[in-house]
Length: 239
Image (cartoon, rainbow, N blue to C red; front, side, top):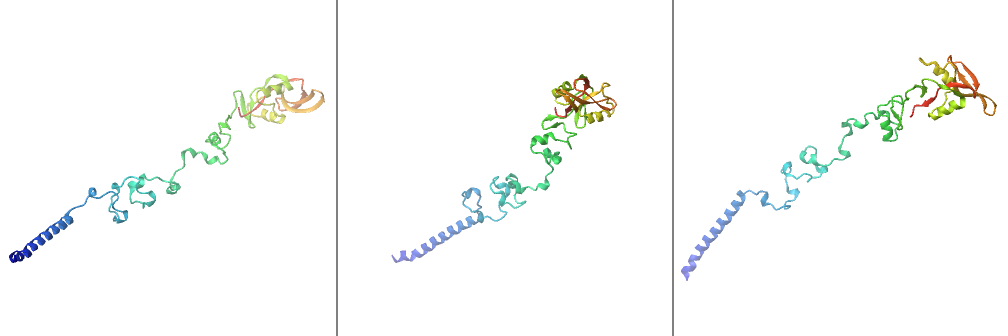
């Protein structure tokens, strides 16, 4: 019995030594072993435990970091995918918008319809349309004083008939002085039988009045409205 008791400390010592060796080997192995991503449970490491610049940008999923949290030039791959708003864009770096290239002279345009009408037009002289209407003179008429004047006079008629014919074409008889001025234009000749104007001078009774006629030499005279003279109409530019 005493011999067994004397041997117990030796056995105990051997057992403790084996335990220390085993524990030491585990610690050593733990120090030597490398931990990879598979050994880390998802979401087990908080962001504040990561050392700055320890995670490469190509290891992050697109849109995983808000654009407002990124510093310029830090993670270009993420910044490129992040949405932009107006505050992120320097408008001075942008050129003139193509569709507005000719809108500098359209300050008074009230809508896009007006802007398309005034495209490339400095003023109404170059405009092809005005408020949706064609601007120009039909064949057989020429522009003068902001309207279209018929190049040749029509057949003789009394004054009311001449006025009605012009109204049917969307125009009217010209004023006496305007007709005289038109007669002085290069290449323009009034009819030798004088032409009616829209000016009325005197009334002598019901349906009896005199109107001004203009001769081919730009002389202004009068004649009764029931007499006949050639006439030409003045039609607005809009058709």
